[in-house]
Length: 310
Image (cartoon, rainbow, N blue to C red; front, side, top):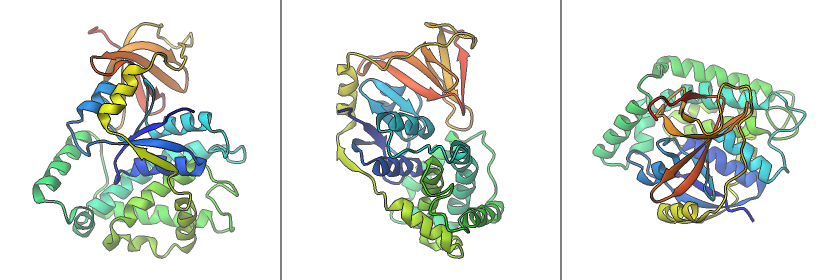
């Protein structure tokens, strides 16, 4: 059976999204707890510089971004599906939730002293300071709403989502759960971690009932290993998932390229192009400890460039 290694940490919203997806699928998985802030040397050994959380590792194939991770999990376990035919807009709603909804929720929660205190109340001041400095650098060029604007906007979004459930449907897009449900759910999950500001959810009874249905899927069956073992797994792998470069997209197999996120955490990852389609880009890179790894990114939300420095 395929060993799924999830690199995550407990309080990461996007990690919670993937954990719930794995629970929905009823899959077993192995967890590696990664540092909350930089430096992340073992993550970089696998990715080459990409340090967003989570990552999914299968041998020496490293999958970045939860949109792509969801597709990989779907390929491994097609049923129950994350992409029902009855909900063709599910990926688009998920993308909105993972970007607009998420980056409205974060300043709503963390922009309020009560929310910040609830999340970091037991942490020493220097740890809070380090976290804020790390995230400030990570999102340096990304515009975000003020706490006041975020409060108004987030409340409006919650009302829209609650209204979507007004006809009695159990999930956002119908009778079946979809990737959209998991993308919205992790945002609400993070709000609930800060009870002093979670009252914004109280007026939305249908949305709260829906959220409990999604959370009830649980996290599947997880075991733990350390990051050194994950690197050994990569180094011991003798093959990678087959990839190919589709002609006509402006790049050639074996070409040196960089791939970077376009929103935040835009550190470019350099490697040799071994896979390219309208959905995915795959680069090969070499690390002294992890060996030869293939790092996979989705096309949406990422930019691929020819590496003229190679």
